[in-house]
Image: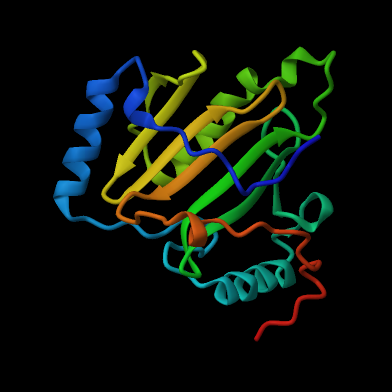
Length: 202
């Protein structure tokens, strides 16, 4: 099962079929407001350098909040208050060594092909519940280019996009819309992070 957070194909929301005008109006209104929301979650934020990111994750691990995800390619946090243990694997994309996008994958730990109750379409309400507790309400449902439903909200410079990645996982992209990434700088592959408990903060 693939957990790799980066790289990821960034969807062009401008080609979404449903609610296109609502989405475009939302983006225009929020960017025009000049309001900035750089907070992501767990004390992470847009503009954080890679060394700051690793140091902060080391501290979160020291507090017992997170650990390494599969193959040390992500950071793992687990929720225990939903229908099943809910894993959240995350890893950022960097532009000029500063976070501008956070890729997150949610899945129920007990998922199995025969357990339809834990498929990604049943997971979406729990993911939206988590996100609304963190960022507030306002998500609108749209249609992704593959015809599947998706959900999005924009607050100032921060866009949060929710997608059905596959039968098991829900993908969330948290992006700073004011950053225009260049291909050579924007994505850093994890390539096997050292376990957080071995990582020494600089």
